[in-house]
Length: 107
Image 1 (cartoon, one colour):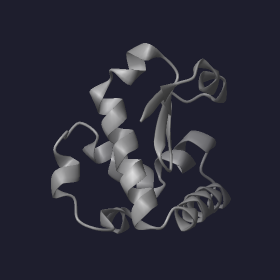
Image 2: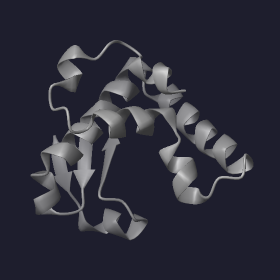
Image 3: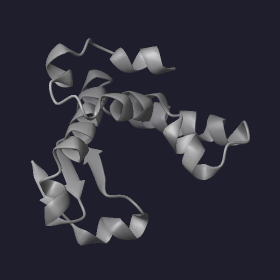
């Protein structure tokens, strides 16, 4: 399910995947196949890690990246989950061939 909520733009994001849904900030972004694929990759990552551990790992990687001296945006982009999603977001068939826990290859 994809939900449009203009308020997430205030957080500086275009879209976010949260357990069962993808939330985007505009109707136009709801039609953006690359953005939606990126968020679907995150949904798969969340479910294969049984949801809660995904968020702990995600935050831990971000904090470690910041401690290592990375700026905010660089720390975010270096998160293994983000690296997998970004590298494969344009391949709309990626999820059909993706291996279980593929994100681990991006650590």
